[in-house]
Image 1 (spheres, rainbow, N blue to C red):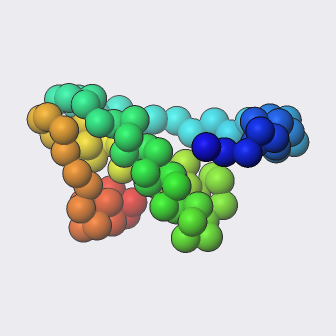
Image 2 (image 1 turned 90 degrees about the horizontal axis):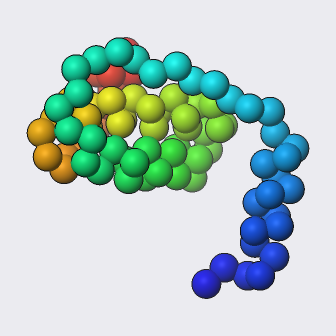
Length: 86
């Protein structure tokens, strides 16, 4: 369980930041199962790896694009993500 002040810290940090708008890429969607989980995982991994927020959002957006292009709950391989980023 996070400390009691955790929510206050998060709200304060969110107020101090500007909004970040990242347009989505148009593509054929087969299944959105697990897309949100993919976004959270990719964003968290990117931030833990030292990426800034904008780069982490872009990476997470591309990872989700790979996942929704597959049927059922799917994973993103490093090769698929690299191909999507290039």
